[in-house]
Length: 235
Image 1 (cartoon, rainbow, N blue to C red):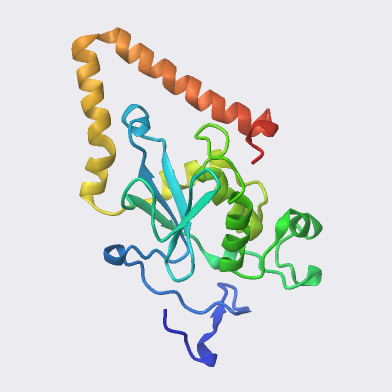
Image 2: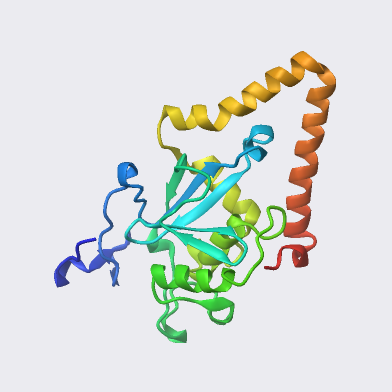
C-alpha cells in the first residue's frame, strides 16, 4: 500500500477532532482479495450445509491482507481457509482505542483495556492476537476463528467494548455483513437448500424436526458457553 504524505496521515473524527496516525485506507478490492480493516466470512464445508449461519471468519490488516485462525497452532496470512470471501464488513478505526500509554486511552475502559492487552495500532492488535493463537489448539466448538477475531477486537476495544466474543462477532457479520456478489449467496445457501430438499424427500417432516433440534443444540451450546460457562471458551 502506498504511504501518504505527512499531511495525509491524519484522519478527522465526526466531531471534528483530529486523530493522528490513521492514514486513509485503500478501497476494498475483491479481485485481489484485499479487504482493509474488514471482518470476512465464508461458509464451512459440511457444517454450513446443515447450518448456513455457521462459517469461518478472519480479520484483515490495514493493507487488506486477510488473517485467520485456521488450525491448531496456525494463523494463516493472505490464505483465507475454506475458500474465497463471501461476506465482509469494514470496521471503523475511529471506534478503536490505540493508547500509547495509560493516559492516552480514548475509551472508557482504562486499566481494564490495558490489562486485557491493548495495542498501539490496528496491525499491532492483529499481531498480538496472532501470537496468542499460534499456541492454541483449534476446535470448532470451543476455540475457533470467531474467538480469534473477538480477541483482536478486544485488543483495540472496538466500539468502547471489551466484551467481544464468539456470539456477537457472528451476529455482527451475519446481520451487517455485505455479500460479495450473487454467486456468494448461491455458494453459501445452495448446499443447504439441496440437503434440505433431499432430507424432506427421503425422511419427510422428521428430518425437519431433527434439523431444527440440531440448530437449537448448536445455538444453545454457543450461548451457554459464551455467557454462562465462559471457562469453556477460554483459549
